[in-house]
Length: 120
Image 1 (cartoon, one colour):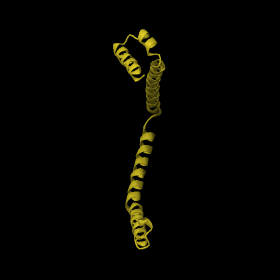
Image 2: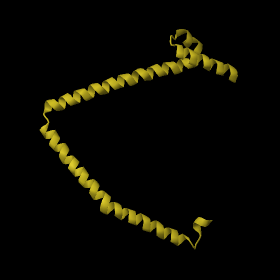
Image 3: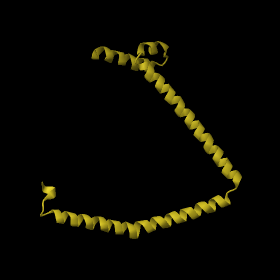
Image 4: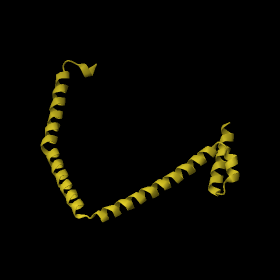
């Protein structure tokens, strides 16, 4: 097998070690100090912002965040239950067609019935 050829094996290992060690030292000397300084500055700004903000502002922000989450979760719950009902009635699409008032759903489920008939 060419991967384990004794002639080129040392050459491949040498370049592998050289590449990854140079990449490691590049990250160690340039990327990590830059990232560290950015995180320190960000942490100082956050500490300064939280000390200057009053507790009523923080409480107001938390209540609006909480109400936004509750609103989004209720929307997700509505669509999830609505879609699960449609999936449940997909097997009995004839019953669902009689209960549904939406024309696009009637067209969709009637086309599904036709595909079921043609596939049998």
